[in-house]
Image 1 (cartoon, rainbow, N blue to C red):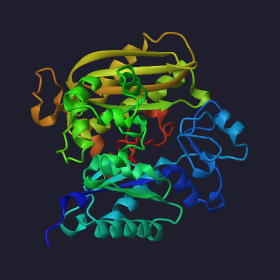
Image 2: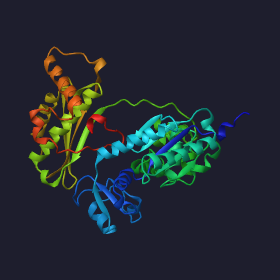
Image 3: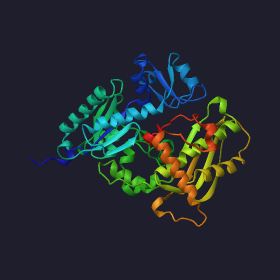
Image 4: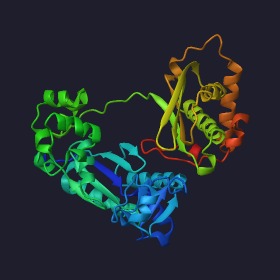
Length: 407
């Protein structure tokens, strides 16, 4: 019997609900059913990086300052996040999903996309797969860990469907459900439309999903200000576009300083360690860098940055020397956070060695990497970063999962 393409679904998208907070509740039974806020450090001036659904019921959100969260929910428990645990649970979740259906892409620490093929595209089979995944995570990973799952004709709409019902939701969008299934949404419900893009669209008279969907491809491209608008037009109509390969432009690390290190000397100690970490990732991912940027945020939200160009290098000592030089330009102020970015990335395969390149330094650096990989992180380190050892706990960017060597 011929299957009706409009009734099929091609993607399953899984989104873990309040992931960091749920992991903390799984690890500590006393936190289950309680309002929990995960924070980077113990300080009222920091913000929640994750909030349990019990906390969200009081109006506390990701990004809410701790002092405001205490006011909204006096009984909220604040936990300093252990990101190594989140990576371990993430890996267990990916392995569990793989037992049910192949994982096409790990989109972030708490989101996974699976391409459906053959009979899996039938709505009944796909729905059973979704329920099977939910049950497997509950059994094999932890009962506190819930997820919302969306099914759709493309990865984008499957993600939108997964966002429609939280927590522990399940939503289907098929070709035959379009565009009506999207009319209930607000513009900001669409991935890719943030505050600035919403403001841009509003200025052009586009304030509702109906208005957005009424545009032609060319009109949406013009309203968006780039080809991404035309791509959005096709995605919202259920077309399964080939994924665009994004070119990596930089490798960066940043860190909010604990109160005792919010001074020039303490901030520089942290910045050196961040630079060392970024250089290690640069080599691990097979790049050379030709630029370095440091950025500083002061108490009160003022910001400063400086950058310089370099000969293509992987050398940690070259990066540390550049940081030391740029740091001399730092204006006065109480430093709240620091960061470093290595840019101008060139794949190792395209790197042309320079006559001025010290081959012995390169061999030394790679030897240090190999020894640390074999015997444990930071068994050997540069003297310039010795004073920073142990000051920077693992942190997760939602779009990048730390490698096992970083745990």
